[in-house]
Image 1 (cartoon, helix red, strand yellow):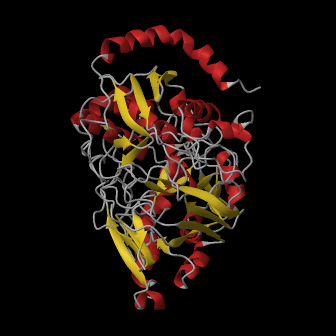
Image 2 (cartoon, rainbow, N blue to C red; image 1 turned 180 degrees about the horizontal axis):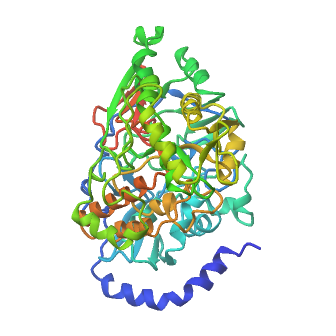
Image 3 (cartoon, rainbow, N blue to C red; image 1 turned 90 degrees about the vertical axis):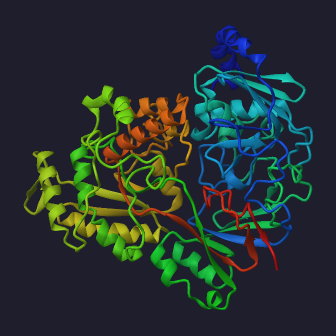
Length: 608
């Protein structure tokens, strides 16, 4: 039976009240409310800033735009674990106490909260709500709504929201519009993370099972946009609230300018692109440099009705590729994972798919200041990793560059190396097929969404390469609902993987690669990393008190993940590419994070 969140909080956290009171008492007198907060130092924008530097405070309101998704959906609630939700709803349909500036590594400014207050150790944080903050139904946002949102999301919500709750010793009302959160863990990032939780309306869900909420019911939020129409699996329409409470808040000025946002769902990427070409879709993001160069010369682009825009950025590459499920044999053996990586003839596939125009991802933070250095680990990184040396994957300390092929289809040199590694791991060719000592064949399947045409082409090319190792690779193409169910249940050998990373990695790293949730249903640690070194490097990131300590810890984490050979990397997206109708405009000032889920449509406007 599920325990009532309030009962659980009282039972678990009451013994911590005295300790946390003693901890905070000594520093409370030195704290003062501020308009923003940064992970290190002070936020860049002053208290009287007018708008975000990449927003246009004079942007007009109006216009309707449509965007394309592939596959279907069966829920409008992105805050619970169940259901398949259009990805945009988690970003476009909700607000938090603070908002993030994408022109700084990690700084927050007041949104629902007018101020933030914390002590030097960041052992607690206090927010003061804006008196004008309102839900879309006109009701005020209260401290009670805030506390309920943190408790409910932390105990019944999607897994992405639960990690913070376990680090909260106490959450309480400290004034008419004030809420204070006291932490039970030493972690300087928590004060910022706490400002980014979605705030939902308590009265909507009172007396109901939030975790089992019907997918057809959209949560009431404070967002500028409300869901006004939908047809499951086909489209969702969001309309700008004409009575939106926050239009004059500096963080919001010049943003959220379109009157209507429509999310159309198509069977696959080809159908979505054809819809864009004839004007049914307003804008698309293009991730393939070859396609960008060769397939965007259709009539509406030639006439100027469609504009091709590029947006540089400074963010890490993140990781994109085929992830291996290390919970299952033989993928629990690093030699097998290395052999499968050797067989992936990147140079040939990249030339086929992108004309060789996009460089390969070389690590989880490649392309940024956070990336590990080539070759042996520098002294600061080595000092962090050496206590775990006996259990580190081979090449972690010495350096482990990705294999490079000769660019030909046969990839003979790497196939020979892969064959030797597989033989060392107990796999040999018997009667033309790769088998282990018991005679069992090496079986490999790749789980894929039906509509993912590009990855499907990559996997088809890869299957020709694994055949040379004696491996019969099977592709399992399933619809979105099946894919969500199976990936959540960790029922796959390999599947497509994309994990975007920021310039300020923090607590989310536990969600991505931490041991604690590695086997939990719905985990984002798809590869199943269970590494004391990874856990320790995440701790080092969270407890860093200087920029140098932070860089060493992040680069050490990058080394352990990369040498773990959990993902066969694809190519990186060094520049954002958006094709859009000429009526869609955006500021010439581009944030350091470039294009992202908050950038389009949030910073754009419509100009007939």
